[in-house]
Image (cartoon, rainbow, N blue to C red):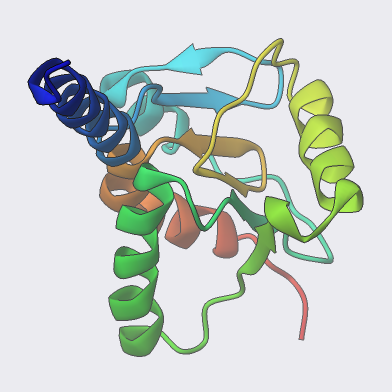
Length: 151
């Protein structure tokens, strides 16, 4: 029996696994009522003032084994060093069922039938997927925190 076909199958499976882990499957920008926004709709949405709030809600859900999450981790490493005053709660979904329950609760609150990681909620706006987080986080965060009336 030749090992060549088995070796080829293993290599093919490795490539598929790598492709899945490095290329995000889902990306979306959505607001609290579940409405998805494209870039122009997001920019129009951000022209209105953010709702006032007492406690900022900026929460990032991730799994350390997720390919898209790895890309965002590299983004956070740089971004948070350059912006040390950023308020950001990071929730590792691998740490237990409580974190997954929170993730599901947020998805329900934002009227999402399905939500995918990496995902960051910035007040009423959610960014799903590595590219949307990297591209729009600073703009949405700046808009949102402009309404912060706290300390």
